[in-house]
Length: 113
Length: 113
Image (cartoon, rainbow over all chains, first blue to last red; front, side, top):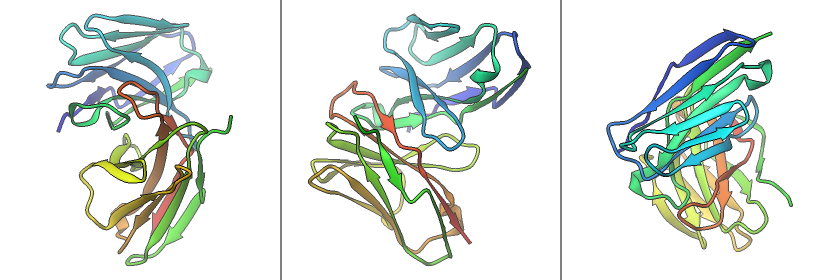
């Protein structure tokens, strides 16, 4: 089973600070995804990275896929209270995709005004 | 376009009982995947249904079973409930393909007493 380890598990910061969340594995993934989940809702896809070394930006969020495709990071610049939520990385379950995902344990981010 | 819906929103059962959770997939989607999310954890893949057949299963015992109907909606059944089954149950729908995006419903919160 391919495992994804996220760190840190909890992050509490002030508005305006920068932060990075890490997602690591000992296995190679064909792609990795990042989701954000708010209380009472299901995860919502933020980005998919598929190429080693790939960098994608979504407004203040920057996602990177490691060169060896074993890790990924999410960097948020100038965090805002609206960024508060559970951030999850996910990869194809069992090495295949077609909608079956294995998730990291998540990072709970709280941004204080 | 209607999103993924799940019912009921919350459910309380006692140990040993049986439960059925329901999911209506997003319009145009033919694949439904089910996940269990314990408090403070990432979702864990239970199984996937495609064309009314189970198409892959995670590390869950046989007392977790499912159905998919011709309209692509789906049910998750759990028999002989245990305390550890208390969790948020998420379904996600997609079109069947290697890179198709999963759209998650808001989940059903199951509490087993």
